[in-house]
Amino acid sequence: MKTRPAYTLIELLVVITIMALIVVFVVVNYSGIMAKSRDQRRFNDLKSIQLAIETYKFENKKCPDGGNKIVEDLLSSKKDPRTNQRYYYSPHPTDCKYEICTLMETKRNLDEDLNREGGVYNYCLFGDRVNREVK
Image (cartoon, rainbow, N blue to C red; front, side):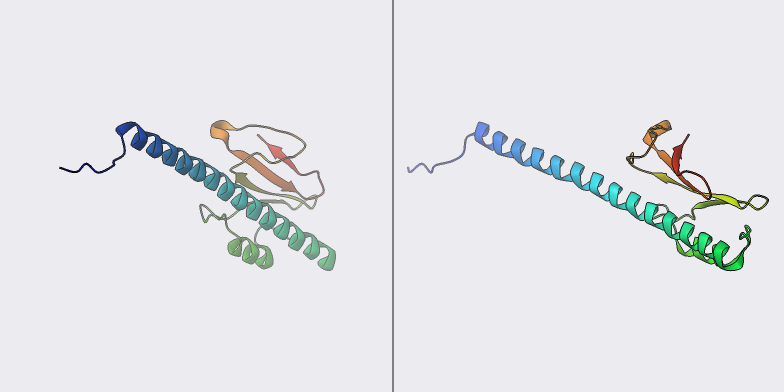
């Protein structure tokens, strides 16, 4: 009777362990990259909304209120890439200030590193003020 060469149990376990480690490494990095790309899209959306509001203020010499059609159309077209919800917009019509906020999945390199519950970071853009993370 001929014997065929075969792999030992140890060799099979080593190969399976290496493959499992590679899969875990790829999955972890992929999810982190996806979270960063969604955060970048959120950041770009907020900047786009801020630019539209500032353009409106410049062209019309007044502040858009909460029910302004241009702002509402822009807010309804720009939504969170993960939850598909609108971004938070709060105008302050008396002093022409506003804030636009969203929740980021990763910590951004900003002036303040303020961690929120569950590792979620609230990022806001403020009209006529400095942009920052808030609690």
